[in-house]
Image (cartoon, rainbow, N blue to C red; front, side):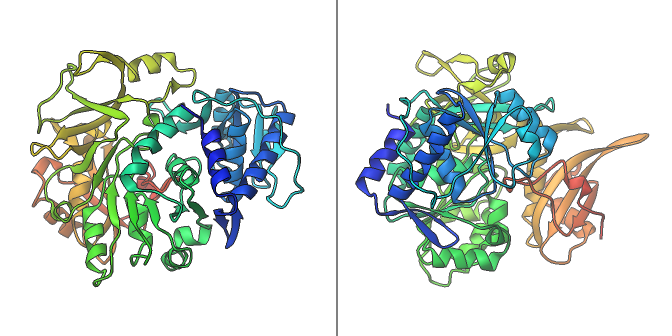
Length: 501
C-alpha cells in the first residue's frame, strides 16, 4: 500500500493547475499547495523533526492548516491537533503525553506551548519558494495523526492513526460516492475533530477542491448558504445538530450530504427535503464512525422510509468494505437479528491503539474469534446496535455508558432524548441524571426550543412514547444548549445552560 504523501503527489502530477484549496475566495492550485507543503516540510526537518515523530499543530482554521497537515506528513511525522481555544492545561497534557517537541503555530498559538518546545511559524503560500527538501521515505505504516478523545477517568487519550487507515477509508468510500475532480467539499470542522480528515483528504485524493468555511459562515445560516452557492459545493459533511442550525435551502450543486458524529435526525431532514419545492435534492448518507476506527465505519443511503420511521434506534447501514462488525452480548456471544449487542469492529481502519495506554489497549482492542473462525483484533466501541430483522443493516441504539440505573430500571438516555426531539418545537435535547441532597436522583431534560414551549407539555408528549420511569422528572427549557469545539452537544455543560422559563 502507498502513503498519503505519494497519493497526493500523483494527484499533483495529474492536475497541477487545478484548484486544490479555497480560503476567503482565493484559490490555491495543487502545484502551489505542493510547494507550500514542501516549505512546511523543510522547516520541520530543519527544526529536528524526524520520521515517526509527532508534531503539534496549533493555529486558527484556514488554508495554512491544510498545507501544514500535508507538510507534516511529508516530513514522515504525524500531527497532533492542539486547538488554541482549548484550556492551557489540557493542551500541555496532550503535548506532553504525545511527546511533542516541535509545534507548528501562528499568532493564535498559546505561548505556553513554547515552554520546552520549539514553535515553528507556519509559512504562507506567497513566501519565496525554496528548493524542495530531501524528504524521508514515507510508507503506509507512518503516523498520520493523533487525535485526543475524552477519557472516562478524566485523562484524554491519544488515538494514533496511520496512512494506511486513511487510505483504506477512501478505497472503500470513493467508489461508493463517486468522488471526482468536479467535487467541491466544505472544510467545516476543526482539525481537532476527525471529520476534518474526511473533508481534507476526500477532495485531495480525488482531484477535488477543499473550501475552507470561515468562522462567520460556521455560525450564521445566511452566510453559510451564500458560501455553498458561491463556491458550488457538491459534498457537504456535517453533524446533525450543526445542520439543523445552519442549512436553510438545498444548494443547487449539492450531490452529497453526509451526516456523522451524532445520531441522525430524521425529522429535520424530512422538513428540509419537504421544503425543497421541486428542486433537485442531493443523495443523503448517514454514517456511523469512531475516532479509533478512522472516521467512518458504516454507511446508509437515507431513504424516504427512513424519514418516516418511528420507534427506537437509528438505521446506520452496513459496514464499509474494509471493515467488519460483530455485535456481542455481555458474555461475548454474537446476538441474533433484532437483539442489541455491543459493536465490535475489525479491519484495516483500526487504530494501532492509544498512546502509552497498554492496559486500555488490551481492554478496548481485544483479539476475538470472528465468524470465519479466525482470530482478529477488534475494537470494543461501547456502542449498542442491533442487526435489523429485514436484513438492511444495523440500527444504532446509543452509548452503553449512557445507560443508567434509575428507580431500579435500566434507562437509555439517548432514547429519552430522541423522544423529546420528536416534538416539532424542540431543536435539541440533553438528558442527565442529577443527584439531590437527601432525595432520590432525578432524570432531568435540558431542551433547546424552536418556539415557545412548556415543560409540562413536553413531559405529556414524552409520556406518549416513553414508559413512566423514563419520562424526565424535570424539563428545563433554555435558549441554547452548549456545544463542543467539534459541534457536538456538550452533555456535561448542559446543566450550566440556564434555568427554566
